Amino acid sequence: MLNTSAHQKTPRTILVVEDEPDLATAIAQRITANGWTARVAGDGASAVRAASQIKPDLVIMDIMLPVMDGIEATKRIIAERPVPVLMLTARDSEADKVMGLSAGADDYMTKPFSPRELIARCEALLRRVERATLIAKNNENEKVLDFGSLVIDPRQRIVTQDGKQVHLTPTEFDLLATLARKPKSVFKREKLLEEVWDWPDASGTRTVDSHVKALRHKLGSDMIRTAHGVGYAFEPPEDGNAATSPIQQ
Image (cartoon, rainbow, N blue to C red; front, side, top):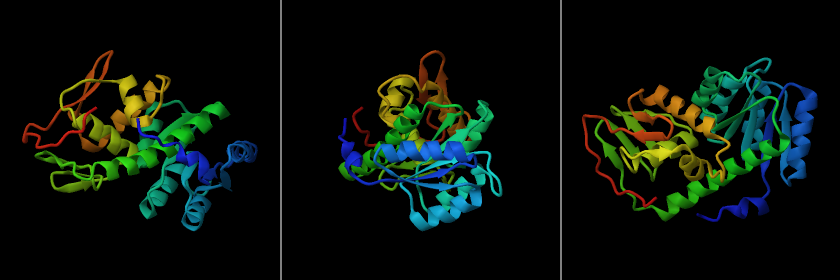
């Protein structure tokens, strides 16, 4: 596995978007205790302005916010500048989670949550950003994954379907590319957590399920097959064959 521990020695700025003052303060204090810098915004509109000004390394975004909700705020922040977003939701509804992921969030947590897990999720998101950069540099010669109507460009991190670019979050792209490098091969959820999320345990298997649903929403329900009780496999479109240079898994 690539060594991505450098983020621990690099100053990081985390934007906390939360309208409950006590919770916002608690999150900010935990972030500061971890050696990062915390900035707080109490509503979606303020979050968009703050993100534009301070250019955070990561955003923790509550969904239910005054003035502008977290979904719209996330869309606007990412449209201006790609940044990993950890969404917070008070509801454990799969629809709410998929909505957040579809808006551009990379991960989500349901309230109430463990402060320790929150920091672990933030660390994992920051590691993934650094790992994606390293992978891009180490695999500059990797060819485009061409499946006819669906084309995945690992170097530029661009996906097109029927000639139109599909907006994917960094996590969604990594998940799709990981599956597509071995078409029709079933990946266990635990393996995907390790490869895509850089999580060493299986505590987030529902996160995999939610991201798959978000990908299906954007690309079509037939693109990723469920192997019940095991995991997922990429099913190439019937109109094209892969012309790829796969990376060894």
